[in-house]
Length: 393
Image (cartoon, rainbow, N blue to C red; front, side, top):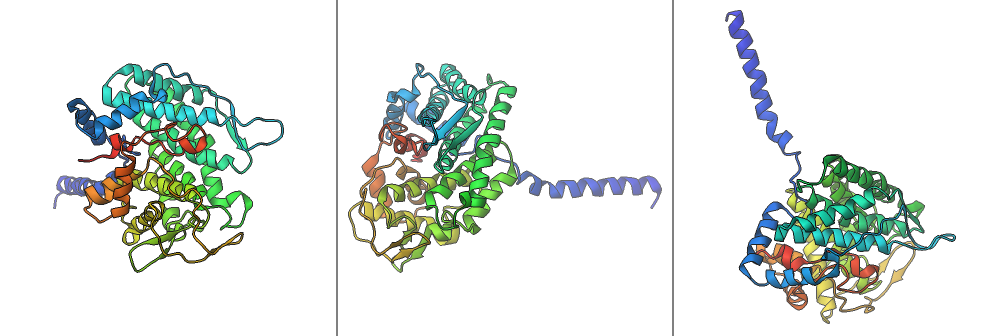
């Protein structure tokens, strides 16, 4: 073999190695937009609303009637958010959850209507906060704020990243805020649990911080952050890990969840937070919905069935702080805008049997958003509008 041929062959070999390894590289790329919704989702919403098709139109009506989706919305950013009373500092976290709900609602309204006025208003909210917020403080409840409002803000920004008029420098500043303020707290809580015993905090604390962590990983193209959330879901030590959140599997296909003996308001919050995590992962080609033989489905059906008024099996739950001998009926029948997500994934997309999820989806349709389920923080624990956003057919 002469020298030129050797050089060409060597070059060809390097090129082929690069090409053959490309799928593993490409597999690490994130889908954008790709948190709770993809571009295909937005195209479906836009088409169905334009056609006047139901139930999408009913979901759209819920969105446009919500004051958070109005062009008259005014953001109220603060430099330090307080959740939980400390010293003489008043709690002011309602400003954050209201503005996060507004940014998301306006982003949705822009994607479906195509009217840039809503995009301008949405990025105006995001910019106002990224120019102002430096810290989240308070009692341990500050970690609820970092989780819940972190994933909500990140989802709004993930939609708006496609807006051509949002300057890159402003988007970069927003991402920096999400990393410096929110992710740092998500990571710290899941690693240290505020210095408490590992089983002290209820599942929803872990789950909301996992939601935020995953959403921020997607938003900032940080595979390490995204993988941190997935790994904790599968192998974590706290109550938000799947084997501790959905901890007792019964022969009838149902599974008891970690907060069932506490109350149903928090049990349904767990459902909502599991849905957010699973949907975002699904849009990045990771199936947490089906993980461990549909473990999430078994837990969600359990909560759905009990909150419809049916009896479910129950095993005494105990941790370092409590022993709960019976399932709690406190808040039984609690309504949250979370059921369309599960119904459309498990029943419509995968063709699985989920009778209690189906009943709940029919019961709450069309789902509203922030503020439609109460004016306090619980009414803003989820972004909502699932009838518009998650209905597949």
